[in-house]
Image (tube, rainbow over all chains, first blue to last red; front, side):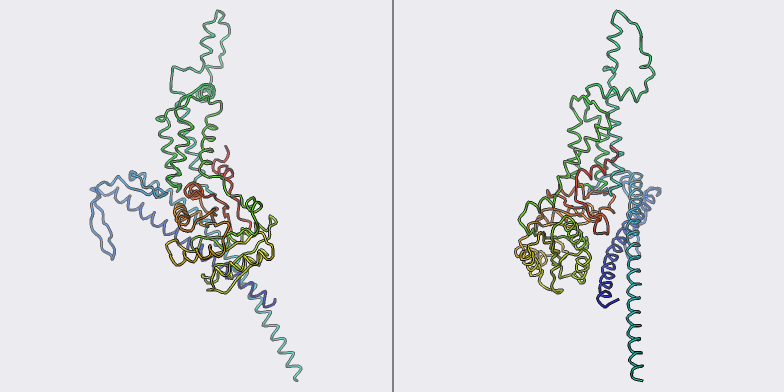
Length: 151
Length: 349
């Protein structure tokens, strides 16, 4: 393998690496969205289960306050396209659960793409490694030949 | 592609069909077997066909709806239309686009004397089909555009960061090369580290000539050189890659303005990702307002289950969709065809 081929492979590896980075950050965003939806489901269920609508509201820094939710069965929900509608607590939970399933399916596709990219990256990395070894062996061979000639 | 929206549309379609069938079955005064009544008044009441008594409710309704004229009121469709509206909004279809689809469906189905003459489901599907085609626009046929345009055709790709602009440039280049056009790529993203190497690798793999300067160079100069190269070598198309930028970054936007002045592109193509949903639509509208766009490419459509951006973008910004990116390979790009998207969404109909 010549130097030019090695260089091209290194470019490929870098390119795949950049693509993988983009997909990884996309996956992270999706995962954050999923976790947020899961937290919302848990909170809505908590509000629904609270006897008098009183729940603990975390305000950051480890601090929480007791709050009374005025209308625990009315939830304002962004259903998509930046449109907010009023739903019952139960319907909102159902909607969020559907969305979580949808996000999981999308995440799966991104993970599959990432896996494919990583497999390709591993193959390229292996070829680069082989190329380096061939180069090193060729150099050693040349040096040994030079040594023989000197003797 | 758009699997979630397809499933939801199937439910909305069933609901609309159900509402029409229910409306058709409701008025007891208009009987489907009216001819039988006149027959009974005839002097020779001979053989009564017993089959009519054994007909199922569904088949009765079907015949009823197919054979007679029917007036469908808005009230009768209200629930189904509300569900359709929710379906579209939940799929990230922009509000004005959702309104347009609902208005189209309502106009097609409500308040008219209509002789259906076909199954209720076909009626609903054809209504949905025409409503969707109404908002999807006609698409942008790049091949025809190039064939009918003075060469070289200069195409400038713009958009926000990380949406797959550079890969799209390579895919479009490969697509055009396979259609027999000669293509040169201008590596105008001199800002992002590794961008020039990335497009260089793409160009090498697809066998497309690339014009590049060093990182940090003036992108206008790179793209000017690309135009000069294309003119002197009588090439058909110049694909100009640019750095990703948000429309709020004044310095980068003025750089884009300079590129436009120097390069004088024939087409400005906005690239965004389908999975960004409504955000992509909002960004495209902003870009169109600030730098202008002649067509749109949506990448990562294969990962988008909702389809909101693809449905909304053309109607919202008034610019056609050109391509959908559907995967990682160079072949994974399809010219946008509204009919194909509608077929994908309404499937088996």
